[in-house]
Amino acid sequence: MSSDREGSESDSTSAHSVTMPSRQSPLYENYSVYSPRGALMFRCSRKKVEWYLNRKLAISLNESRTVIQLTFEPKGNGRVGEGEEYYLEDRENICVGCGGQVRLTSHHIVPFQYRKFMPLEIKSHASHDIVLLCNRCHDAYESKALSVKKEYAKKYDIPLEGRGYIPHPQHRRLHAAAKALLLKDNKIPAWRLKELESQIREFFGVDGSIDDEVLKQALGLPLLSRSDDFEEHGEVVVRKMSENELEEFIRMWRKHFVEHVKPQSLSAMWRVEDPVRNRASATVTLVSTMT
Image (cartoon, rainbow, N blue to C red; front, side, top):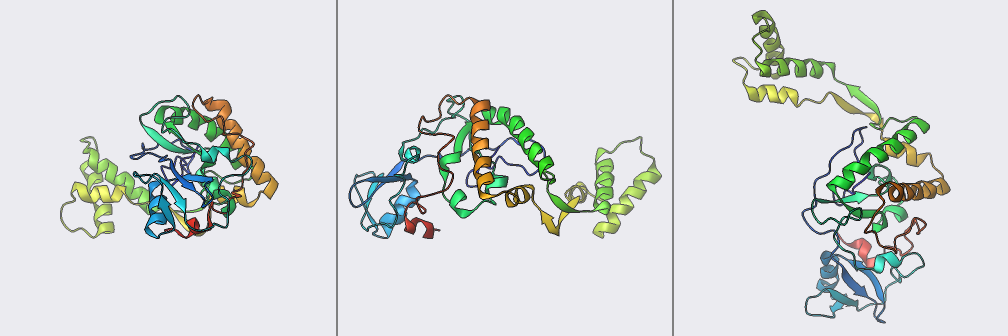
């Protein structure tokens, strides 16, 4: 399904499942930000807390600088609306599926290949649908998610790999030649080997013998490239949906995730029907200016 490109992305634009790399740092740092009136507004990362402190926009309430209080009156109230209780919780860095603590990856419940084309109020800083899964739970779920993506590919007539690729037949021939030469198969006639070497020499402008590095370069040549009118699968699907359809689409993915992963360690505050759009106005207006 998906892992945000803010972390690992588990969304491949191809029709194949991809094993995502494990996170090298915790997803949840659980730093707390309070309003000048003493109300908890949201949880965030150390980087955001330091941003406020370094600009004298907040004061630290403890020695470890894990809890801060803003020194200005923010325009927004933070994550205090109905259905947003999940954002105020301390979260554990464990797999929400099985509770495991190793080989964790950030997983987008709504696949990133769709979410990246959604309106800003849906995708901006909305961590509701980014959870931690271990590689085993992630890989087990991906085949189920792939089946759903294929249904939408058919419904909206847009392949998972997108539409608008330009094929490079010459590169394909060079791939075949390089593979044959790297195999060093004695069964290939000498005249054929010379033919294959000639193809490689002509393309790369090599006069002498061809070493393995040149052959590896040939194997690295793209077989396809995107044309100017290339369209991504997720872009087309999202574009063709109305606002209501988009919200239903997001909740469909949430429900699908719960039904198939059967998470043992997902917060009770996380709900399929929780708001889809970020009503907190980026939590506090100044957060959106951070780099």
